[in-house]
Length: 315
Length: 277
Image 1: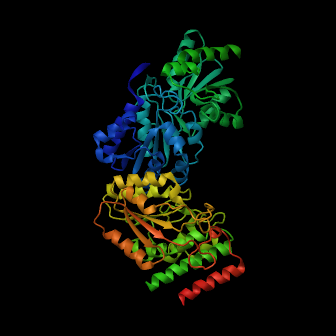
Image 2: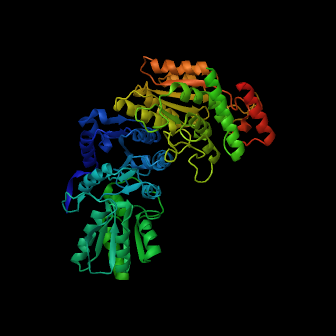
Image 3: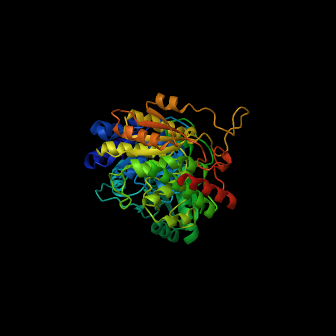
């Protein structure tokens, strides 16, 4: 595993610029954050496909909906906190209910938002976006996966939400040019222990580091990465629930109504299994560096290693 | 104009009959919008009822979605669906939802019902026409009460920035809303002065103020817009009367959404038939 040479946002900007040049239907809608989200790359490469909507997310989402009714493929992007929370009624009424082909991109998701603090963190977006009946929700783990997911999103006809992290992450997936399959979980490791870890987004590479350290101590734990949160890979979840005694879910989101809750929604009705959900608890966060905040909330590789060891030893 | 007068009256009769027979729906706002819908669908807009998805059609977004019944009657009269289907309005499994649903009924260009949202979709349609080099016009109808939503002004700013001279927003300025403001010196809970013309001008729009019940003024206004050699989107401030066409409903906020009694229904229809004769 290596530190990515590019951040998710850089790859997002580059890939959308390419898509806009390849597909005339693609347009990028910015909420005056293009230099942060890297929509600026689209403006540079293909100015006519870049639309500045100003600091007005509700209208941004509505304009995207109108463009989609005319056969365009609008990619509407802002910080996650703004595009999901501030424009949620617009997402429901103007995008999801009419099943319009709008691609929504939440940049700066979760905790990793560069010292911006409470207003810019997003711990609710998985809850909000997975509640929408027609929406698909994608949560890539590294920059290369972002690229593959964006191709799949552009080919998919219907509303789709992409949850991105801001900064350089860790490339943890093997190189592949395989087409990304929406709704399929990725088995990263099959361990010997009867505990399995399930993770999503930027937490997946950090869980992988923690599990590698535990492996060195002789604790061998299964790891499955979920880049699609809706539709969920129920087959994988049922297999996990049937084969392991204890599941651990890890997310950079509220544990309530988040990834772990989605997993439990499946397991509780099909194959109940004890689950520990690691993520943000019932609280707001604050300013701080990425690693400081991850550690504060128990999501750094070091804290994850300690917590997972405790669980394994406690069982 | 006589034909348009007939259509407008038929739309009003359809609104009142449907709400009366279905025992549900809005009535005052649909009646204030009826003349504009008659002109749009029977004079101005280039549409093909047998090909509702025709890509070069003019678009219409009823941003004040609670007036959906008025649009349904206009669409039925235009031939988009059988007139009898109006009697399914607001029923379970009906294509005629209380608020328009584009996934159910052909001819609806945008799902609306949460105020302030349709105008943004209209901006998107007008932008798409520019990007795709098509020459259709997008018409959006909003309410004056709806203009209290901040999103309307977010959309107004962006439309002017992109010089969307292919976008027309009609403000159905009937000055009454569902409940409104009580003020001693105002008759019947009218909204505070909203300075519509000044606001739209300040946002960079070309403003045309008309009597929203004068069919010639509506038609001339819309025609001027189509020929306009300007680089601005167009706001038509249409001064209207809520409940227009039925004496006891006019200017009374309580007819925002109220079902007429049997005697009120017959009285309303007879008043409208007098216009036709």
